Length: 90
Image (cartoon, rainbow, N blue to C red; front, side):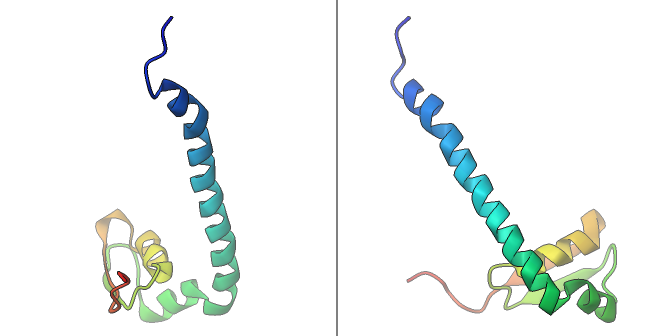
């Protein structure tokens, strides 16, 4: 059977790419767990009264640390608007 160009690449390297993405996400989760200890996002959202269905804005969202916590809290019936004031394009 003749190999189609690119087939070897897809079979050999695609799992590595997926693994790299997954490893990056795991590392970010570990960083966020440490960050949760000192930023206490659940307490912040409790104090602000953010609950399921709430519409909130994360101004100065940066990498989205609070954005993801907010999205989890407001659920599918809520809205999270995230905007960062810095243009990261250099």
